[in-house]
Image (cartoon, rainbow, N blue to C red):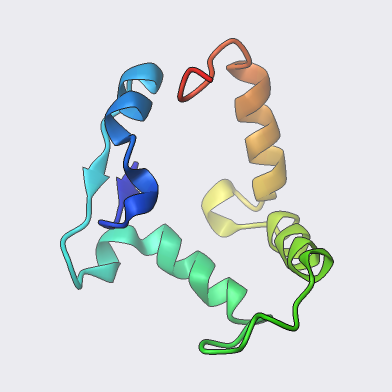
Length: 101
């Protein structure tokens, strides 16, 4: 997995240990090191342009956007939907919980 240096991944060591994976951190100001993330940001901007005020958006609105993104086939998944890929991962590894919660 590759992350930027945000606080949202503060428990990276636990995640890495429990999933037995390596976690890499992108260099500052190097978005090309996280191309999947940057691509997803671009897809989100189809619905929410950069800098838009999100306060008028309801949770239902945001859930709808998430659903649209997760049911859109992606080239990187051989034109399968992210939702299908996640379901497959969860089915194959249902005994493992990433952070041990």
